[in-house]
Length: 234
Picture 1 (cartoon, rainbow, N blue to C red):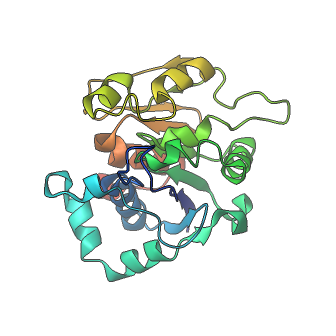
Picture 2: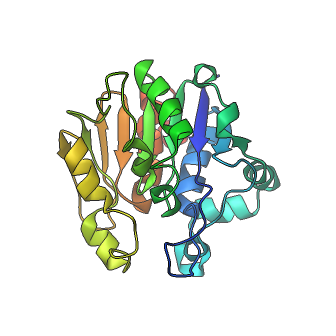
C-alpha cells in the first residue's frame, strides 16, 4: 500500500480584513477521496497539528460538491481531520508522495514555514511525487536545495492565477500574488481559463490551478505512483 502525506494550513486569518480563511474544503476532500478510493493510506498533517481551520467561504452551499458532501457524512474522515499530526513529527521517509491543498491559508504559513520547506525538500531530493493545488503551491516558494537553489528552478508550474485572485477580490489582501512569485522562481508558469481545471506535471512535480483542478491533480499524482484511480477502474 502506498502512503501519501497531505499537508494542510494552520492559518485562519485573512490578512488584516478581520475575515477568516484556512483550507478550501473541495481542495481537501476531492484529493482525499481520490487517494482513499485508490487504496492509498493517507496521513493528514499541519504546522500546528489538530484541527486545521476551514475557509468559511468553502463551506457555503454554492461551493459544495459530491466530495464535500461525502466528507460531511464521513465520521472517520472528519475525526482524522480534527486530529492532524504536527508537521514537526513527520518523517518524509515514511511516505511515497505528498499533496498540499489550497485555500488562502497557505499563503501566510506554509509559504514561510521552515519545517514545511525542509519536509518538501526531502520529497524533492528523494524524487518522490510532490502535488499541490490552487494556493497550495505557496508551500513550494521557499523550498530549496542545499545550495539555496529553488526546486522550482526550470520547472513548469501552475497555481491560482492573478486574474482569479482579482476575481475573488483579494489581490490587495494576500501577502503576495502567487502567480507572480512562481513566475520569478520557476521555468515557466502555465495557466488555463479562469476556474477551469488545469494541471501541469513536470517530472515528479504536479500543480493544479484552482479548486476544479483538485481531483485531476490527485489523479496525476496517483499515476506517478502507478496506482489505478477509481475513475480509471470504472
